[in-house]
Amino acid sequence: MLTYLPPQISPPRIKLRPSISKQMIITLKEIHKTYRLSKTKTLEALKGVNLSVKRGEIFGIVGESGAGKSTLIRCINLLEIPTKGEVIVDHQNLTALSPAELRKARRKIGMIFQHFNLLQSRTVYKNIAFPLELAGLSASGISKKIDPILDLTGLADKKYHYPSQLSGGQKQRVAIARALANEPDILLSDEATSALDPETKHSILQLLKQINEQFGLTIVLITHEMSVIKEICHRLAMISDGKIVEQANVIDFFTRPETDVGKRFIHSQAIRMLPESVQARLSPQNKGTLPLVRISFLGDSAEAPLITYLVQNFSLHINILQAQFEKIRDEMIGMMLVELSGNLDDVEKGRNYLHAQGAFTEVIGYVQPIR
Amino acid sequence: MFSPFVNLIFEGTLQTIYMVLVSGVLSVLGGVPLGIVLFITRDNHILENALCNRSLGMVVNVVRAIPFIILLIVLIPLTRLIVGSSIGPTAAIVPLSIGAIPFVARIVENALLEVNPGLIEAGQAMGASPLQIICKVLLPEAMPSIIQGVTVTWISLVGYSAMAGVVGAKGLGDIAVEYGRYRNEPVILWSSIALLIMLVYVIQYVGDWLARRHTR
Image (cartoon, rainbow over all chains, first blue to last red; front, side, top):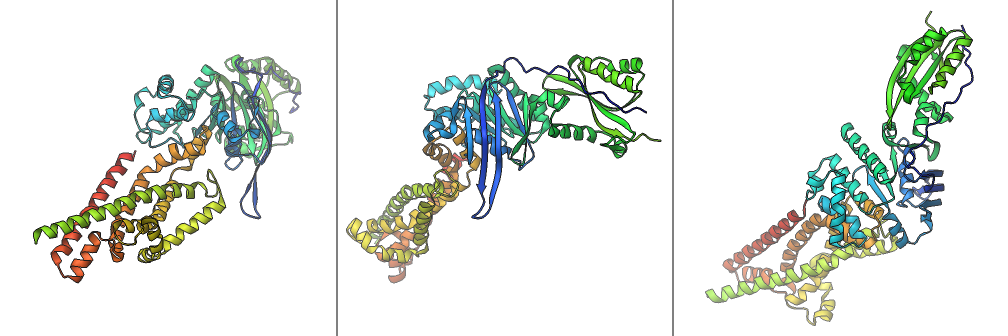
């Protein structure tokens, strides 16, 4: 039995949408944030975070609760003031601004929250008018701006309702409308879909995606759910224990992870999908066992009958353990976990063939065959 | 017999209304800003200032700890200084207001504490100044509880104004004690009690109505 696998050949990388510029709109440099809990106790929430967000992209920061993502997103508009480090937004060092200058800069950074944070005493219209009032706009100037935003967010018929009369999804739409009223360059989203049911979550994410595409608005969101990242983000950062442990293009991350952290995450997700009986026979080392290969198919390769071709032309035995299609942003991606067996030459040729077709293969473990 | 009785009660009612109204308005004018300052200077609030918060908090606690009847007597020199006399409804307004201001301040502080902190954060994120946060976020959002708290204060002021009768403040409370207790005239006693009850009902009704109008 042959278990040798040839070195991996990289398929061409996926390019970002052309509307995303190379120019950075947000740069965080060596951000530290330490909270004083008591006289003797401190909590280091952020431990030297470096992050850059490009103008026009949707950038997702994912991490478990307590990882520091909430603190991190609040450092972008300085709701949390970093203990150390610089926050550069649109070529302006926010950490060096006076309070009045900071307030002006914040008007160009919209923010939405998990629990919406709408003013209960104001109608939908008045809530959206709020940031414009703060900026000193006249009543007529305000009303001219709000109607198009109401249409965009699908709230035209809710104009004079109070937040208590709205559903969660509608409340978040009001919050989005409010965040857009000042025509910001950046929208920060703090777990904005975490309190919503799956269907509403989807519609809010689609709204964010639409706003990003229509206005080129840069969106930075934090979430604990990978599904949110998969649905709308161009790039992602993983945060763990106050540090950024991975930054990658989202499609690359899910099809061909490069860092150890990324690989561990993707592999453990793949393995979790396997039946328990297979998981029991799995080991990370090769002890005369069959390689468990994760194949990801991208674009056209996702729809071509590649496995059939593989079996017919390379006399490989392929045992498909798991297969699925997944949509990442607008891209269809096929993922498959297979046991491969055959002679060395054929395995190598087979993998080369797959790589040439734009698929990506990777050994994620070895399976003890059933005797 | 009938006419002096009516005149007496009518005059007493007006005096009570005058005392409650003026000291009620003064307690709001003094208590609301004080309550706001107590709130915003707390730790981790928009204008955190421990020294200011502690010292104001202490003053408020001291005044609230003094029983009203004692406050009335203690404040006699101050009342003389401000009003020129320590007797009569106008003189009673000084201790009534000073006693009620800390009460309103705590009520306002507690009402503001109940405002969702996320709203302050949202306001800051939109570039609101501390003053804008107070006027456009905190006060409108806390309005129903502030109105309810002020209603309670005004009702207490009706009771305290009766107590102020002891130092010659006149009003319905004074009439009830004077005529009911010392001259044994139950009709006057019960009439003044009935009017006090009506006054309390009116205040409660108006307070509830205003609070309801602000509740969303």
